[in-house]
Image (tube, rainbow, N blue to C red; front, side, top):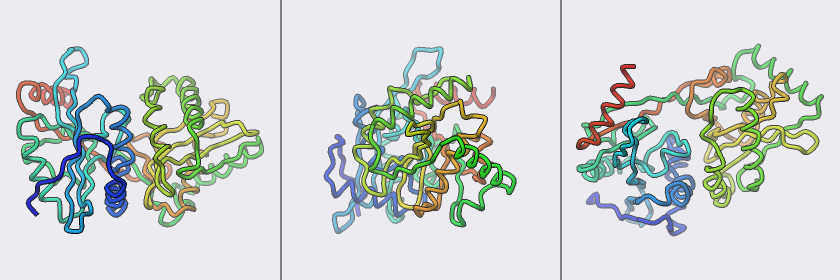
Length: 346
């Protein structure tokens, strides 16, 4: 093994490579949906279509992919008040779209080669690796520094959903389900490959309703993100891809929870529900229903993704931390480094 990968510069990959890449993510206990081919290639074709990107692939003696590192040349704003964009080399699929647990997909015996190649590739570029999963910290050049941290709570479903949270919290959930059932609301699980794009439109509508009622700011999940998620629906395969927990009242969706299923994991990505049912805890009941549906399908890790909102911990979630790493080069990189130092000091 000489450490030299093959480089792909378009998202048009052969089916065997995509299959191998999926297996790398599924076989890795730290593997992330956001580091796999479904998310990365869909992102490349939609949100990242105008950016120069590359996919470094290391193959074994049998020709199968043993490591995949997706990179893209992007530009970051040095400061929100200063119209200066800094060129960076970053992970393809990160940034817009809110990807967590980012990083390459690789077999353990390829780690040293991938790390050495990344150090050479970033020799003359500012390297920005946001939301990198902690399992990949050893792949970074020695001069890289952590500049951001994000809590990503996750719930362990190994012992079943009836052991999550406190006894009082579980009892409150049961009461909420009874109230909602009496009002004619039922819950339905749609596994990967069974939902159409119209459900994304319903999710967006309900998400807007909830945010407007809560008056808690502008969400990054808007209509401009729909092309990415429609592409994800198109490429879903059985047991792998977008899945939905839907709450219906008389066949009308009143709540939609959206996330990604693969291997024995589920990443909860977005939610929307009709605020008319806030007093009956529809949002909490929707999450509870999703946890139960996932457990019934063999999911063992329910990942709440980025954010330390209190409700996640009421379901017994425990933090896993993502870190943003910066290796600055030149004046632009120095500006980015200063930006993060000032943030820490504020």
